[in-house]
Length: 115
Length: 117
Image (cartoon, rainbow over all chains, first blue to last red; front, side):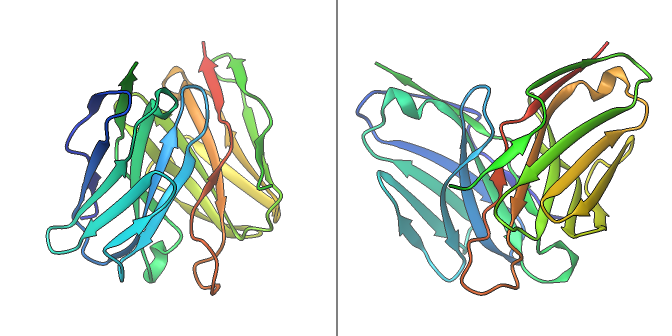
């Protein structure tokens, strides 16, 4: 069945370090992946997305890597700042059929940035 | 600027009450979603709608119903609130994936924290 999970539920880093948040997915039919950031008391905010025809995509200080061979997704945050402290969710979408509207979310990783 | 708004940030209701949560989006999105978010369980889809008057059950529809009479508005209804429905409720919207050249991301509202006593 579909599942999206995270290897680490919590991650603590020092300010200025790079952070890597990992996500495993089990549905090889998924063709779109997205990372969200959720700060305390707020709704999830889009960070970056990637389609399955790509291996890597870069944004501002963030990079998403997709390894379809092992069904693994990661989010890299460069020079992590205290404002990056939040819960990060990965989500997958499978095109076609009755579920092409739906995102399946992982349970989230809490990133804490220590000054 | 993209906007999804929810009618209340905090709501306290009594067991057995009928509860309405309203969501409005201003992006002309076809799809709208209701999730609940609980610690350790992540986001779970309750219902979604891909067009006006169209709805589909998500993963946990029991105890909920929805209404979409206009494209921009999606309502979640708790017919008889129970304490196990105490949660954070998040509304989201997105474009239809069949549209070319659009992002498939879901845009989220700020959430409604509902407490049922």
